[in-house]
Image (tube, rainbow, N blue to C red; front, top):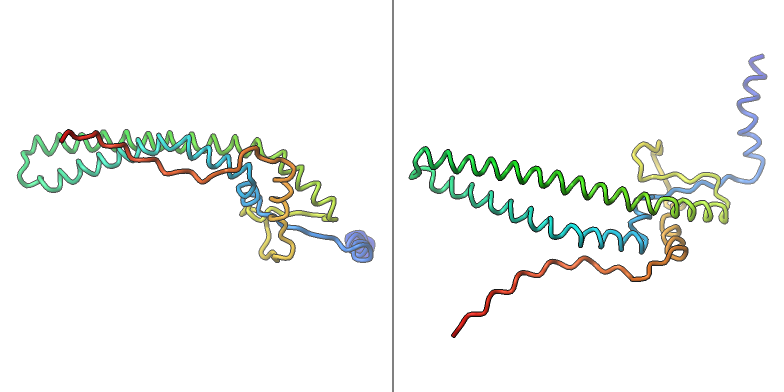
Length: 192
């Protein structure tokens, strides 16, 4: 009985060893998605969308630092009421800043999830076509920390190939450009 069970467990391994060799591939799906033209364009568009909000949050942070500096420099000469008022202003602005940061982070996370949800079916299709065409039996996602892989050879990494195939399958009409830094406001002209 024990020999029969052992044979049933080992038989598939022997059958696979006697047949064609099994090809295994690895992909960093996060790098693949962000490496495609569509992924780069989406990241660029997201950065442009969030730039005004980031600038407003940065301005709030600068206001808080200015108030903290004022409290620190004038602390000895200030009355207790002025110190308390300044401390209250710092606390209120810090709370507002933290809420704005949380809201911006939540919005960015939602936008990223939406981008990934749009790209995932296409990426899956590309990986399936590639794996079928190249005889892969298994493709592991090595970007996921829950994938139980301790070592992956560069020889089986198909990330670059998938990026190229994705870009061929789903071309982006406009090549992505790096997000431009916001221009500082033009100072008003002075009369001479």
